[in-house]
Length: 344
Length: 290
Image 1 (cartoon, rainbow over the protein chains, first blue to last red):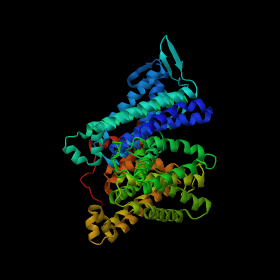
Image 2: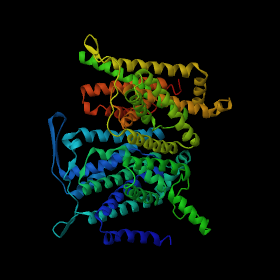
Image 3: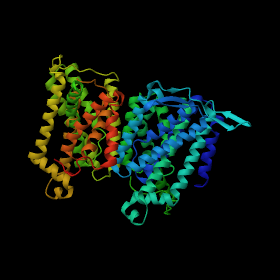
Image 4: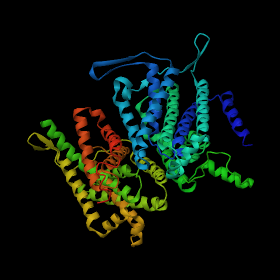
């Protein structure tokens, strides 16, 4: 049962465009998928290393802007009369550059802020996101500022000369999101189930003990930050080339909060948690929309978050796992090696 | 030179309210170890209260200021009693998540009640500015500065010369020992959160007539308060006071001589620089309250 479930799940996701022809729902699924990928990347930091990054949207936005700018080209003047002209690259190359730049930002933030922890780390990450947002808003020559970057080209994949496919429309983009999501999931899974993942969990659970055993704190935390930022940047690239217009509002704090809610609700520190949380909070707005104004929706989210922390502090996935095990009368160690069973 | 002295005066006027915001936040962090995301909401709450009592209900401006302060204290006490009391002993991330939830509820409730359109508060102070040589400053700004300074002094006095203040300082230094000595930690927590919230609400009420009142006005204010707290060192009241003025100077000079678009970025850049070189804040030696 446990073994076949993921395959059934993947098969189900692959089949969706075959029977779901409603464009609106496909759009919801694509954006849900993109946000679920960001939630997965946040979970790597929040769940497995225990660092609450509240500037995560910065990596998403940097990925989106870099990818968009690389594929649109730009012409800017910088200090001292220098001028940088960039000819447009293919969207896929832009996507790769976006991941790279987001990962570099992750490296810088990781290096900088793992010297400082807890409250300081949270505030550094928020500050970083806010600075990036202000740059996107004010560096009009590069980013168009509040006028937004538009006409971002969609992805074109294929092999030059043999076969090419431009991802117009919903269905190809749905599969693109699914593919990136699958790659991200496998990457995170391999990482946290490896020696590196155990080192991260050890650091989260008891840092003095872990360091006394020779685990290099900064190295592992920076590695987690880089991978996490890179994945968030990939999600940003997907978003930019799917929506095809981005403005500085994609850096708003509320998007980070959405990711945090997804991770906390689903269950941080579990591999399935962000997926469950992402799907719940991707679909929930659609269901709430007819009966609640946006403000009422956010109030419901806020109350939900407080209730989850009070009554289901480890999230939905661990709670269901416990229930399942007690029902089956099994007391074996969790199969999911990454489950730390720790407190929130 | 004239331009410089004008910038200095502007920064001084602004710094008072920044310090007020920072002190409230640093007290709450220092004593309760809570990263208070609702601080900005208490600030906008103060703004809306002054709007409600002056423009809607027609109360005297000065009386409305006091009402806003008192209501801020009450709202803070309610948040502490309903949410934070249950979380005593929980780790810092857990309380942070709850405070984020609370922030979302408060901000969107404001949006629902008042709508997204900014509200203007009319002050009774004379329109024409106070002119001193080449420098001119609005009477309202002077009034705001004086009230903020008085509130800061009152907070100092409370912390240093009252029994409650002594209990707060004791709790800050060693919670368990203070508790053994008969300090009621729950009461101290409630008082601290209420005081910090009251100060934020007062800052919002004071700045309501200077700027416009909007549901999201608290977001930037909260981030700036965090910046001030980090500059001064967590839990350090003097640090927060000086930090408030430093931030105001950095913003004013940055806006005046670099680019006004990046005015709000100054605080965040300062946070990053300070944490890079001196992560414990600029005044780290005084890791104590008062």
